[in-house]
Each structure stands twice: as structure tokens, then as C-alpha cells.
Length: 237
Image (cartoon, rainbow, N blue to C red; front, side, top):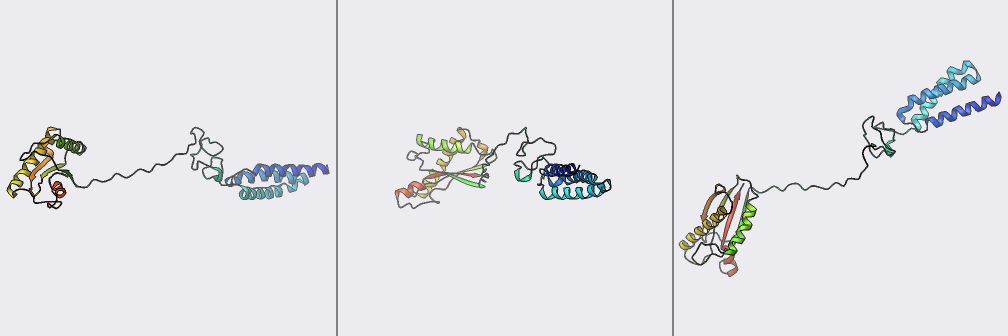
């Protein structure tokens, strides 16, 4: 009988410790209940009068052990936070050993930064340099049309409510009045080409020539005069 009294408490205590070894901190009420039952059983072995004290003592010890040894499980999925690869899982969802929902395959998603859209300026100027009009002519040459086709491709991406201004410029060779008239003719030739190739005439708000009055380079060099012979397409958004 003495051997039985010694063996049974050891078995009960071992069961209590092993039963509470893997619980969470939040399970301390369950541990307390188990400890109370175990304590009562231990007390009864010695005497029935010890059952109440055994239950109280066993419940307190078990609850304290559970709180001290248990690990926190914030989302309540049964996987401690330090091993939970999928925190904040919804209640009731079945999870694997890493705390991830069984119905969703765990995957590593690489976040690719998305560049913020670049705001377009309210006004933009497209410069078409050195249009090869024939001498004393506003007729566009084949290379001129190729350059303007690139401009048209660009303009087709604009909204329909933008307004275009086509401005012709010349170098300083020749009389001022002649250059003024020639720059206007060439600006009109460019505007007409844009319209003939799909750009709405309603988009073109103004067509004008300014002659040699707005150079962008020195007219003393061939390169400078080449830069000054230009047509500008100004986009107002």
C-alpha cells in the first residue's frame, strides 16, 4: 500500500506536467482545473480531508506553471508566436505547423516598387530643327515629313483637349520682312501636315511666324543658323 501511495502521486504529477508543457499562456484556466483535480486525487490518497486542500494547491501550482511555461499565441491558432509564420490568422481557420492556413500555399512574394507616374508639365515645346524647305518655298521635303511623323506619333498620345501652337523661326540671312513671311508660310505648312495626318484641327489653336526675332543660337556660325531655322510645336495642357 505504501508503494502505491508513492507511485500514484508520481504518475499524477508527471501527467500534470506533461499535460501543461505544450499549452499557451491563455490556457491557464484549463491547467488550473487539471491541477485541481490532480491535487484532489493526491490529497485523497492520504486522507479524504486533504482533498480540498489538494485541489486548491494543485490548481494554483498548475495555473502558475502554465503561465510561466506557456508561450503566447496571439491569433489563437495553436501555434506560438515565435513559430507562427502567418500571424493574425482568422479564428477557426485550420493551420499547418507554421501557423499558415492549410488551404493557402505559403509563398514568398517579392514586392516590386512601382514608380510614381511622372506628372507632365502644363506646357511643353517640341522643337523640329532645320526643316529642309526648298529655297523660297514652304513645301516640305521627304526628310521633313519623316521628322514630323515622329512628332505626330507623339501628339497622338495627348488628350483631345490640349491646344497646340505652331511657331515658325528663321535664321538672320535675308531681310526681316522676308524672313517674317517665310517663317509664317513654313509654320502653316507644318500645321497643314499635322492635320492631314490625323491631328485634329481643333487642337491647333494658333499658327504664327516670328522670323528671325527669337534665335536660340548665334547667327554668326553655320551651326547656330541651323539651330535657328526651326519650327516649334507648343503643347498647352
